[in-house]
Every structure is written in structure tokens, then in C-alpha cells.
Image 1 (cartoon, protein in one colour):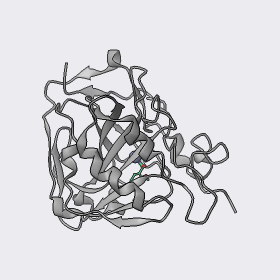
Image 2: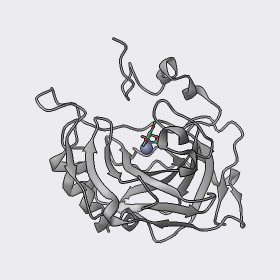
Image 3: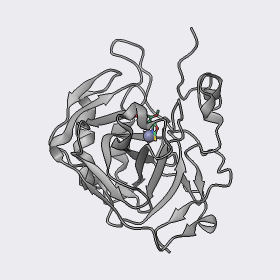
Image 4: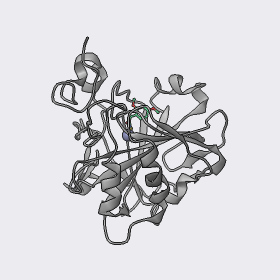
Length: 261
Ligand SMILES: COc1ccc([C@H]2OC(=S)NC2=O)c(OC)c1
Ligand SMILES: [Zn+2]
């Protein structure tokens, strides 16, 4: 059977296009952001998240990341403003991380790779459902938050990391309720925005990215906790879940705007 896509040499980002042709598109993510090429847009409004903690449902290890899913059956937890028109519903959040603290993020900022990158995935209900939104250029909005290893770790990450022990292997799921993901936001609302894609197959180019400039801090122990997740299922040989990041893709002339100078 064809090997399912992943992040290893035989099924990794360089080969995704063999089964997922969109992976070679002109609006792929992530990208490297060079401040010198960014256009400051003073007309860019602030973005606003209004999340209902009661919408959080479960946390899951799907063998590729650890993700928290939310009830998105109505406008319960929404993202508005910034480059967006209308309210986008929060569907899930997940992370990408490295095998060591010096890399792991998908977007790279002026050559800097962060230890991890957290994605909050929202979709535009004007397209009926998530599957319909994937086919539209304004279908999905992802808030990206960089995680940096530092001395004053953000206590709000603890809640997610405390659950790791219950979802060590692929397919493990645990209840994850009464959680407002906006506690993960850094102080500053400064952001870059550009049009791109999902960073995993099928790599649909339906995403308006809102990348926060200010990273949140985590401890090296917290990163080690994330790296203790396994790709394998229970009773299978241990295969650490690390380096689940796609490298930067060609910018192809796209404009990256900044909400800040
Ligand atoms: C809710 O559905 C999703 C969520 C995330 C992705 C990937 O794209 C980005 S961004 N991060 C990823 O891991 C996705 O890809 C098809 C589908
Ligand atoms: Zn992601």
C-alpha cells in the first residue's frame, strides 16, 4: 500500500505532491517572513477572539499532532476583525514542534525558528460547513502563535500539557472541557497576515493567516513533555512524535502585511 503522508524521508514534505498535487501550488504555507519585505498596513484593523470555554470538548493524539477540538455547530467561539470579513468559527487547535528547542515552528521569522507553533483553526460559516470552506480562498483563518523556550513559562500552557500523559499514543483521546484558548494569546495583538494553505496534505489554499508577532514562553521541560507523545499506537514500537513541521514554501510574489511598524 502507498505510504500515508508523514514527516519521514519516505513520506515527508518533499513527496507530498505525489499524492497531493496542491502541495506544489503558488500559495503554500508555511513561509519564511523577512521583515524587510513586509508591507506595514496601517488600515489593518485589530482582530478579536470571543471564545466560549464551554465549547471545548476533547484532546486527541492523532499520531501527527496533539489537538483540542471545539463545538463549531454554531457561532459559539469566533474570530473576527483583522483581515477577516465576518465571524470565523473555532474548530480546533494543535501544535507543531521539533526534536530539540532550536527548531520546530513551521513559519520562520527573519531566519528564526521557534521551538513550536500553535495553530488555532477557524472556518467561515458562509460556506455551509468545514468541507465547503476548504474549497474557498476565504474559507479558513488560522491564528499562529510561536512558542519560545524561556525562563518565565506561560502557566496557561499547563492545562494542555497536563493532559499529555492521558494521550501518549496515537488514537488516545481525553475529555478537555471548560477551556478558553484565548488565555494562550501573548500580550501584544501585533500580527502578520498573508494568504496561504494548510501545512499538511491536501494543502488546500484556503487560509487567511494571522501570525502573532510576540511568541509565548514555555519551559524546556514543557517542550520535553510535548516530545513525550508517540506517533505509534499502544503496544506498537515507540516512535516519538517530534518534527511534525513542514519547512517554508516559495512565497511566489505574495504580499505579507504587518499590522505594526
Ligand atoms: C481542522 O482541519 C485541519 C487542521 C489543520 C491542518 C493542517 O494545516 C495546518 S494550518 N496545520 C495543520 O496541521 C489541516 O490540514 C489539512 C486540516
Ligand atoms: Zn498546523
